[in-house]
View 1 (tube, helix red, strand yellow):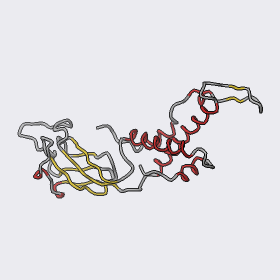
View 2 (tube, helix red, strand yellow):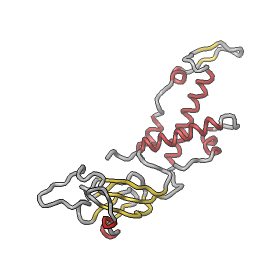
View 3 (cartoon, one colour):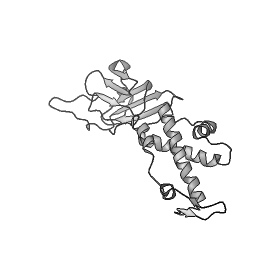
Length: 204
């Protein structure tokens, strides 16, 4: 996922000053990695190479929208010699959803009497393709900011409580009370997960 400049992260979280820039940068890298792992896809854009089953007529690419398919090779042995390259006219690319459809049935033809299924001929289809760079969806950016803010608040609270599970502490300016869930840690915000689920690639 494209890295946002620190100013945009701090604006989204209403943070001023530069004292916590190193922490925010670290949290930003972690948030990007988590989002891409959770969604099962990359939002950075660029060139991708994937291997898929050959027993079906459709291949569901992990990253989309697809800008272009550079090459598509089909080989039941997964060696992909030069003659395994398929003509672009033999398949259709549904770029918006990242689907490649073979025009003549399963990518690996079935022998007479065979019934092919989704797990036949693993890694028989090799697709090299590109996706547009610098096109991170707005909800993904919002989820990134919310996740950074979530971890940032937790880190600041842990630092303020000297990294112990403290509910109250005497203080020269009065009694400090820390929310229990922030003092002992809490799950990821449901709002972040709701934003990400819409962009999650189903398991294949």
